Length: 381
Image (cartoon, rainbow, N blue to C red; front, side, top):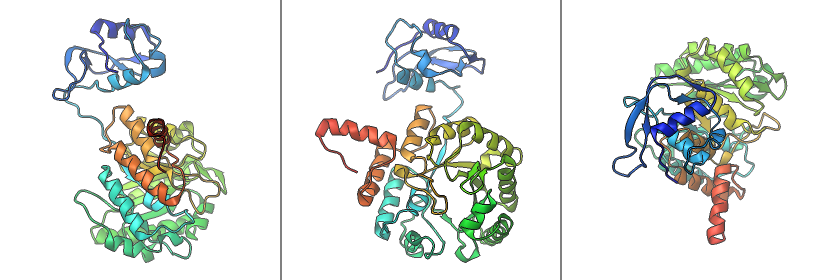
């Protein structure tokens, strides 16, 4: 529902609600949007940025109908005329990290169609596979065939995960936990970093960019809590090697906004935020909250998995990744740009869920499926 709000009414909200802070000038929208002109503006004020619970704002009397969702969307349109919408890049890991723990082997053709559907939805970075031993992760046995058959599109990137020179391609992997490193890559952190350095050197010599991964950044299934300093040390080592980006992964999903904030604060002392990404699992239902914390701290790259697929074969009890559908829905609600078309993304999730004969883990997809069911009496996936 579109609504109108006058500058006087908006000033009333500002003076009635707590925790508003002064910031550069923003424009106040006073007319509903149109397809051709977008939001129109009639008056500007200084100091109208807010930090406040949107749900509480619905209780402020404006003298007109208002709902939290509409008000959030309304406020998200406020920006300085010279500033474009902030972009958050999604790295889709469903094809690799999402499927690697599935017992049912997914045929190469199904993986390729999933990649195409994700690309159609607007995702620009899609992890394609992992060059690991098929003995340990059978799902990735078609790694070479998949990369050969993959339809390359301009502007799209298809990184792959490799732990050592034997599987050298585009990505490297390390861990902040000594025990997890030994379980996952059969070597210590020090040895893992040495292997990574070999891969990075070879990749840079071939003019290939390398993305680094740090797993267990706040907690380990074998050691418990991980000190922020341990994560920071590994992240800095990967950055110093020449990794253009380091993805910080909460592999077992035990992180909270509090522990994530402390970890990021320590990491960002030595690695710039523009070189960092976050990767959260949703074991304790904290993934979205952690994504929001990271984004608020300046992180602009988020790893996620379509339909919330995922887990880790070496992390007992770890559930799936943050669902890409949920991450995109939240980021769009915050007024951020991902370049992803949610309806096509949900369709891609339904496609792979139907093949796996399992329900989606995405709350957004579930909600839309329930809505569809009330309309036509049937749903897919």
